[in-house]
Image (cartoon, rainbow, N blue to C red):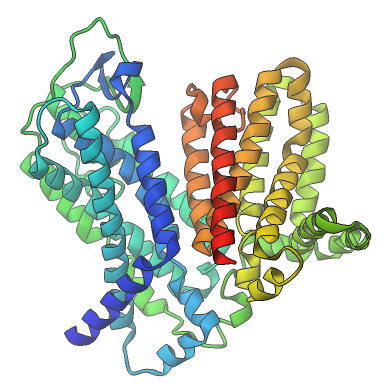
Length: 520
């Protein structure tokens, strides 16, 4: 392997990623989410709770707690941030040039892997700086920088290696370059995270050999705490505590030689997806990867949409109506009609969900709403970016109103699609649980604004999709926190959380307006 070529390719990869607007947006999102997820002891929540007793926010506690949250956040979101460069090469035409060069598959993919790791590593450093600032505000005792570095390196590096390795593998296989790979990795991530927690659930001090497959680091973090307190009654990531009980202190010396060895082995095993990536890399071969299919290829939704393509004819009256409606109303209706034409399965989903919401019992509305929100989020994640993907952003920005009106139109279409999916559920909630209905409306308006903002700023749908799926996963597992129940499907959302989401949505709209005005 030519080291000079490797260094040049890897550094070029880092520069291309760091100069993107999506990097700044991701950095801000990570900082906000990480700060919000670290519980404030003054409010009755703590990141680590042992037997209903909080643990003091010393350096190792904040480092372990924040690293555990980062394992979840970067393990999922990092994949969607890193992947997609191969599709960009195909769309820009540079892929044909790369494929014709004498650079080997191994050198090309390993250099991209190194660039992806460096990119996520930079975001991780920014994340750690956020936690250091949080330590100054909420921490107990001085900041021990070496403790932070040790815990972050041992817990997070295997996760970063595995995440980037999977991104490289999925971009190397033509059939996994699009949404099929996005959805598949989400289930892979959920499985390995759940498996890591299950394997270490009843373990106290013993470190099982299977821990080396804990790429997420969650299982290792649990073992780390159990070695400090010798108990399995642990709440990691956030939980309420009894303020009357004296807080505990986590010992400073936690790492055993066996646990360190397991994390090193995990980091080595995390490189294994690179082997099939090198063997299966399509090398931009035109018989495997076409420009028209670079963004998405043979995902299950694509297959279903292909089977339901005749239903797209039923949407034609919407286009005729949109042509007759004046101004913004006609443009919004045209965007909605175009969405249903490109995804006929969404039309079937809207009709099926609406009918189901009319007849199912009240207790079944929550699960139905969860499914509706997931399908809507996957559908609209690229609504604000599809003109970029089709290379028509100059054309759509040249119509009356320009890019600012386009942003407002896409936001309105996204929100209206949300109400098509979840409006009947909101109507039934309004009859018996008006606050829950308000939370649903606020969630749709807020997430629509964020989808439009992230799409226009980052130029890719994956940023919103990653954060949306991550938030949905957290909401499914944390069913008692009102602020996490964005759509109200857990039934714990309240007026305060609904107003908070409305405020965030308003700020996102203002930010999107400013960004598009600046771009104009």
